[in-house]
Amino acid sequence: MEELLAKAKEAIHKSYAPYSNFKVGASLLTSGGIFTGANIENISYSATMCAERVAVFNAISNGEMEFEAICVYHNGEQMPYPCGSCLQVLSEFVVAEDFTIYVANDYKVEQYTLAQLLPVKFEGDLDV
Ligand code: THU
Image (cartoon, rainbow, N blue to C red; front, side, top):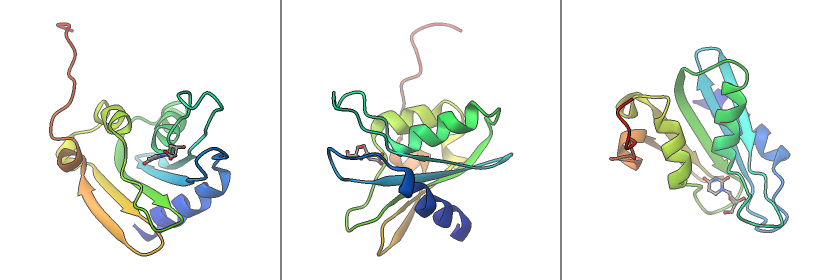
């Protein structure tokens, strides 16, 4: 956990958040190592991407799809609880009960499973 938090704190330096000024760093523990991400905003607002999904896409585009835990860090007073879209994206690749989510700010760290934060998910409408 300490290493994951340290990497999330490092990743926040890459955040591009000129509109909200709310910086987030994420670090994802995979079977092939730790991959990081930071939130990247856009002037259109809706094209903004969260730190968690940047970390997930970073891992997958580097060939890693086995995830164990993620740490999400904000350098302020608010807690950066992952949004629904990020939880849904994570749920594609993990067993929700076995995947740990650490949410951290400068004052505390909370620990959850994905199953706690996303008890149900969209499972598709096709028989694939
Ligand atoms: N954001 C994240 O990167 N992750 C979260 O856990 C919640 C929100 C970003 C999106 C946007 O750049 C900024 O925080 C404010 O919503």
